[in-house]
Length: 438
Image 1 (cartoon, one colour):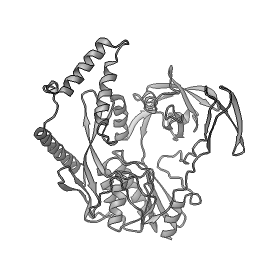
Image 2 (cartoon, helix red, strand yellow; image 1 turned 60 degrees about the vertical axis):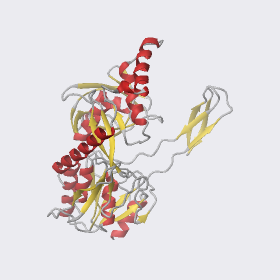
Image 3 (tube, rainbow, N blue to C red; image 1 turned 180 degrees about the horizontal axis):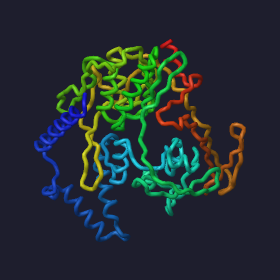
Image 4 (cartoon, one colour; image 1 turned 120 degrees about the vertical axis):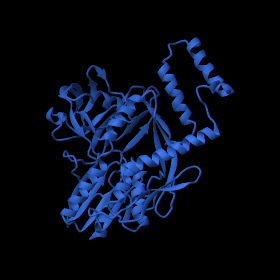
């Protein structure tokens, strides 16, 4: 299954959608005022600009209308991405950009702010002494302590060779560094060899045009090392490119359908077919999944389960059995529109159902952090409690209520991109798969 096949299929589906639209009718610039709803929308925009007490942000209003229109479908997988977010998305998809060489996560419980989750060797941040856990305070002169994560990413990235000044906080103390933006390649595949010469490959996302190349290289390395069995980890992989999922499956199958697409007319078309290759891995295979394994991860696990090529180990998967087609919009934004459902080789439709593993094991890597709430104290009063042997101070709000949520244990990551770090002792799913291969 190659990229050309993907383009032809999407073009065909797009043409089908266009014909259906023409047959069913719909709003256009010319006929928007032909219905009461269309006239209402136009009048509301006009009256808002004419009557509203405060200045109206035209872009914000119209983008809100677009988001609301797609939101009315009550389909979480059909949505609008604003131009700024779409630009970041496009760079992530290409797998390359210019930045400082770090991995970020949200700093606050509401998903805002940013802190360093990993620092990669050889990057600008590594050279500047930035460490895991450092929290972003300012980028240039912009306060980002409560900014959206994508806004922080947008400000950190830029043109090659340009500089960015970042103020971080470490243990509550601020420090500022100036860094030169350098090429960063997103490595979505991590691998290692476990005791007993068992191979392990983790695929973190399929939303990377380089993932097929990276995965093929990892499989080739495992074959070169003559591993006695292979573990493919798809846990917490939310999916991405459908053709990337097909190409991963094709590393293990020699013939037969991999996945099929079915449109709203119930017409079904095989999207990917396996072919025999000298690079195929034909040894014992275990696939790890959990409740966050979705979309292309389910395409892979479903195909390998149906063909009995692999044993699926872990938790029930997420259950995203639909495919989206991206539509680039005039404002630079993008709409992702669900236009088909996908089926496993045996014709299973897993949307909102997920895939049941052959061997069910609970994911033990991350425990629920300690959290508590309370009330009945004076507003603004500080309370110190002992949590897991350490003092924790919380401040009551205006109603005398206080809340504490412990920090979620972060996964251990190597500073060397592409190198996997695992722990057989604390990871029940991995340990079970490993034991099954022995």
